[in-house]
Length: 278
Image 1 (cartoon, rainbow, N blue to C red):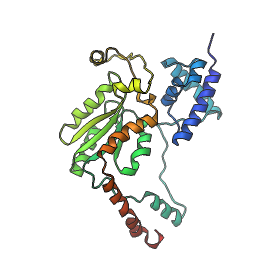
Image 2 (image 1 turned 30 degrees about the vertical axis):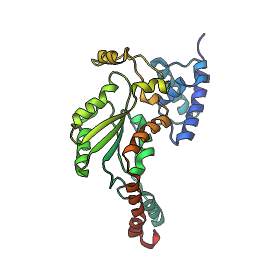
Image 3 (image 1 turned 90 degrees about the horizontal axis):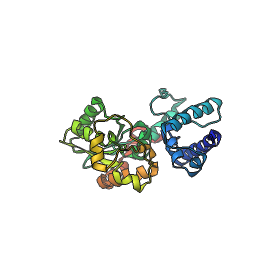
Image 4 (image 1 turned 120 degrees about the vertical axis):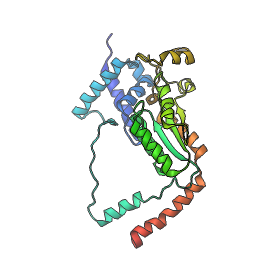
């Protein structure tokens, strides 16, 4: 009996709206796929964790978006941008109040960077960590030399050790990305710590496991370590769980008294910029 995609897409619409309400941003298509994989109703309707279902989901949600009957999804690769302008001086002053920050990482014993493998989770890092003035990026797989060189420059500029908190996929390639990242950064002054996904997280969070069907020279080493070959994507982890894992490690490093001292400087900075209008 053929599956009816209408109830699957209707359920997908509900999940997008619920996700957007919960996190203040829409899911990516890949994250929506895993929302459906983990949803009991979508599974009853016949949605499964396969590339074929993912592609069909992409096709049908695009049809719905063109027709104006399916909500927006997040786009992490392609986007529009426009330089901000201000209608009047009051609008400019309000913008200054919103962005007025000192370097909130000043006074910390270490420089901190928070990093994910894929851009689909980068927006959440900004939501959770922008307030601390830490460095944020997505590697997009095995990272570029530009990212590595910039990170080294940041570390040298701060003249203190740098800790990189990293989260990526649990598969033959994904397990090796942070190792490669650490090797290319060098061992002096920069330490990469994997926050997720760790092997135990797959069972702990009941994450969907997919076949690992890529040709990869690292596959045998993965089999030797874990007794099999599979792929578990970071996008399958609930963002609240990912936040908990990041913050547990971040809080071990962060000096909140030094942070508060920086926050206390900001009203004076704003007054210096805006005067009596602060």
